[in-house]
Length: 345
Ligand SMILES: [Zn+2]
Image (cartoon, rainbow, N blue to C red; front, top):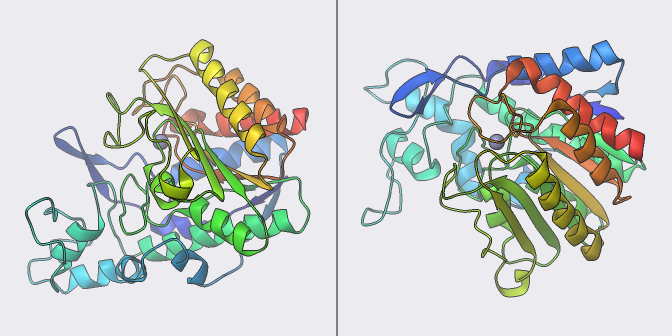
């Protein structure tokens, strides 16, 4: 399997995030990629490929143009603020209900307008990492269209929380959504996105919520208990033409394979019925029992089963990296998913 990867992500590092009342070093950090690469090398798995540049036009197909301008300029804009403190741009005031919904010229206003939480810092290397991560996903899509059975886009930063004009949850450009749209634009009739990250893919859901050419299926921690809290309920089934094209399978804290496997069967059944031309998988492995920010109980061998179940759909399959924060274990869980897929394919 080809693995698309670039070292450019390393520049997006060194910032903190705000969690439960305190600033902590970001869980989403470059070392996550090192552990995955180390496991791949040790197992002799995959063939590494550099991404090529597609420009920003594919991202504009699913994101607001002003939002993309903001992502590119956020760090520099913040540095020009008279009270800019340090190198890291982060929001601290949000345009919530009752406030103006249009940002003024201040970097603080723009940060609050285009971010929905405090996990999306901008350092000098953030924009190059965002842009390259999107190119990684687009390059993976091109490899699939050129005839590969499957491909893995090792994206960082991740993307599935990013909405049309909002960054959050470590995500800036929604890589999987951009790749799904690019597949349609290149001639696919319908595509499906299976999101197995522990957290609900609120961005992907919202981008495609009123469309019938993209089926979104997500298995995740229940929004009654879990980030991103405001989306991911079972009753969110799509709207307008998209009615029936969104399937949420939320699960409670403590879910192990017995519950997860049942939900995965339902997801796979729905994907089979839909019969997409291409399957994209938002691959997060923060469902692992030792993940520091999650509450599922999956074991290493369960990822082999996930990969095998996905292979059973017999579709061209594009794996796109999302979350996973048990850094020492992230590599084996990603590798198991992909080898489980290849062994069953
Ligand atoms: Zn996650």
